[in-house]
Structures are given as C-alpha cells and as structure tokens.
Length: 356
Image 1 (tube, rainbow, N blue to C red):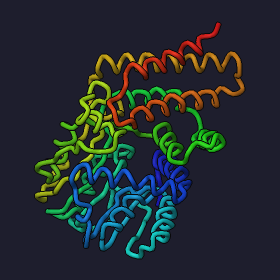
Image 2: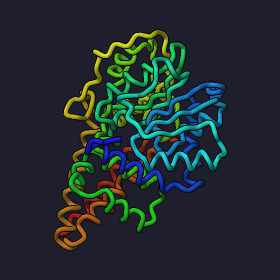
Image 3: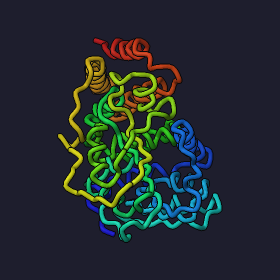
C-alpha cells in the first residue's frame, strides 16, 4: 500500500520502536492492560469466543491480550509493515494460530458492516491523519451489541504540556538519531518507545470527554462512560480517583463502550483546533509548570551551544529525557502527584544550567 509522508513517518516511529521489545519488556507491556480491566471491573472473559479487530495493533499486545482471554479470532490492521512482522512474531511465540495481521489504513477498512464482536483501538486515532474517519470506520464494522475498547489522549495537564515543549524543540531533528542515542545510553526499551512516540509522531491530538462522548453517541454508543480506574501513572486515575484534574486535565480517555444501535452520523466531528484536538483552558498551576519547561528548554540550548555546540542535539535529548523520566516516575507513584517535589526538581535544573 502507498503511505502519505505523514503515514510513513508514523509507521517508522512505531515500527522502529516496537520491534525492540524482548519477552521481558513485552510482558511488562501487557501488564497494564490486565490492571485496567481489573480496576474498571471488566471481566476479560468478555473476549471469549468473539471475533475481534485490533485496529492499529502496534506491537500486537492488544491482540495477545484478547487471545489470552479466549478470542476465537483476532484480525489486526496497522500502517507499519514492521509492526506486521513484530505482531506475527509474538503470535508465534505465544502459540496462537487464530491471528491474522495486515498492513492497512483504518480510514478505509475492507470489512462489511458489523463484521466484529469487539473492536480494540488503543492509542491510535489521535496519531492518524483523519481521526474522525478512522473512528467512523471502526464503529461501522462493530456489531450492534458489540463492544469497543477505545483509548485516546485527554486534553490538558502537565504531562502533555511538557511533551509539547519537547516536540517543538525537536521538530526538525531525526527520530533515528534520537533512537540511536537512547539505545546507546541503554534506556529501557519501553521508555525508548515512549519517548520516540511522544516526541516524533506527526500528530499528537488530545480531546475532552464532552467532545468524544458527543462523537460516540453519533456512532451508536448511547451511553459512553469514560473509565476511571487504572494504573497509578494513568492520568485518568490521577484525575478521577486522586482528584488532580488541575495537574492532569481530562485524564486518559479510555472506554469499553457498547454499540447499542446502528446509527452512523459522520457529520459529528472531533475538533482539531491548531492541530491539537479539543479546545482546553489550562489551570494556573499547569501554566506555571509550562513556564518552567520553557525556561529549562532555553537554558539547555544556551548551555550546550556555549560549551558543547557540536553536541547540542545530544544535550537536548538528554535533558528532555531526564525531565520526562522524572515526571513519569513521579506519576507512577501510588500517592497523589507531589507538586512541591517536582517544583524543587525543576528549580534545581534551572539553577544548575544558569551558569554565567
């Protein structure tokens, strides 16, 4: 199939990172799925005997998860030919013969209406050229009465604002150069995939619950409910369980929604304001962090340009990786996010880089 330039870059970003996983990393990658189903009181046996579509399968972990819980057949579609090879490798490793993986585009699925009992689409559409058409299509092929597992990024918060600063600074750099640096520094493969994903994928849209719910109702999901349970680092958990919406915006938008009728209103559109998704007003505390992120970004560039100009890119990658790693590690703690400790960390970076 012929990919657009944006699709080629998206395919490359995910294909190059997902193929790195060894069995230990892949098993770790599976674990959050089990936790999210448990924390949201969803019996994973819901997949038993079902024909399932993994829409944008990436590494293939969603496919493996569904097969482990009794899916009778799993069909996967993804832009990346490398991901096809990676997913086939994992299917073979786990001994599943009821999986088929194809290179294809979610915006034009070659399946009849209501072909699948369950559709799985985890962290995909916000990166696509046309999220609306993709969501229309995966809804079209889902049976009335069937379920969709859907994950999209939620608007706002400290994490995505840091990612936006990094994306701005690395916009004209090469993802393979960055990948090589991260691997040379022996960054764990899971973190490598996270950084390359966040920093280099062409589109990184985020949505509000209200905007996504309106779209889902138009596609036959009469009572969509954003899930609130999850792992400690899920922003949905931080927002809905620990009450930190001022820090993490809308949280992760995860759904296990039932299609209750065959309505398919394509006129309802997810917004794409400034190519970021939904309009969103950040909290004062988030904006304070954004100001520090920008200061640190400028200081990293000035420091490296002054003292090690030939290694400017390495210094940027190293500095950004350190900031995002600390933020993610603090988000992974079971307690509410410690604002004071993160502020102290950022202040120390600013002090250390402010050399005259």
